[in-house]
Length: 308
Image 1: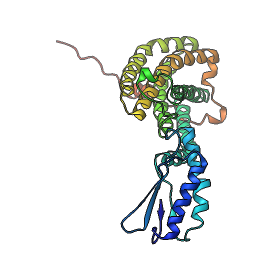
Image 2: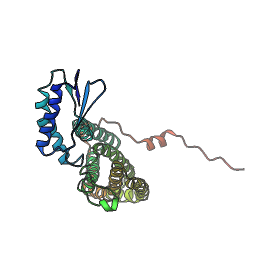
Image 3: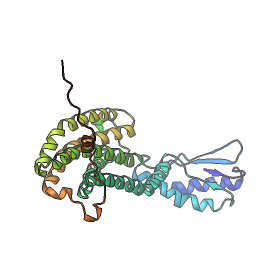
Image 4: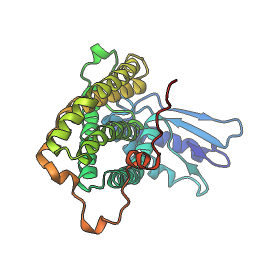
């Protein structure tokens, strides 16, 4: 895209020809290269068909070549007031990815930090939040791996009915992280609340874990089954980004509700034993949250009403 006072002068016509010559010489930009001018003759759009599938590594390299080897030398020959911008689907994806990468650490730090503080105050343990974050990141990492294996490497295309573009849609990884982390925390707090309740009643940690998992298993399994069924519907849609979202969420919830919460969580809690509830002395000042016990103390007992 070019903008100037008049983009139809001989100087600009020469620049368009030079653009085409340099672009075709790279071998990653193809014909037809077209130039379109608006009625006011102030804006010219030059279309450069790039090699690749639009989002794959070939297209990204072609875009980088366009931006570094084709445009700057020609732009230097045009008037100083000439403005330029590179647009299109590939450029939008690359620029969006760059923005996402720069903002992702902020999102990760906020989500992980808030989850750590919440679990630290709720369970009065520094081990519980650290272990919860590690387990939740395992389920998120597994979902990322499945997405790359299926949609980036192109496996199961016939089964899922799609043609791989060689990449995962740009907005999905960060979106998937926030949603899955929230769902995983929901499972985690639900299970640990039952375990902590039993421990507070004097039940040994080993037995509390066993009884807690057993008493919450049916609820967790039912909730996971409903979510997997709903997300699986998204995987049947034709839109590739929605299909990736459905597959990623369905697989992640399945792994989280079975392998993570059903195997790794109880296994690590049994191995750690009483260390699960370790709290450093310098954090003893934190309030103890026990809403159910407080409620039982505050509500006076009501004597039964005699029936005449």
